[in-house]
Length: 106
Image (cartoon, rainbow, N blue to C red):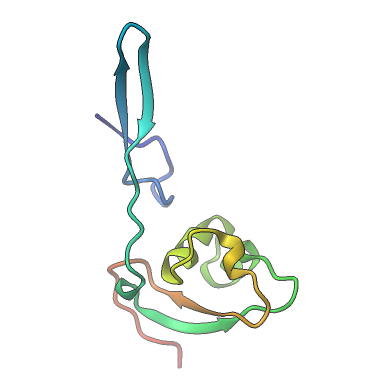
């Protein structure tokens, strides 16, 4: 078992690369399962209402300064697919990373 080749700030950073030996056919590499944490583990900083035409990467760039961190907003809002959150009028929880305490914006 080896550590993940993914970036340290990516959603698969903690996943391990595993190997399965197919009898007589060689090895198949795969990633261990990533369990989505319960949204209650995230300290909410604020709420944001999605505007018409807004994409999750745009929202993530605005609040987390990195459009590739969209998965953090998905996790905090119990969404498996980013498109679920791109609904005009939808209220999104903007949170700290899992396990980090935060102070809501004043």
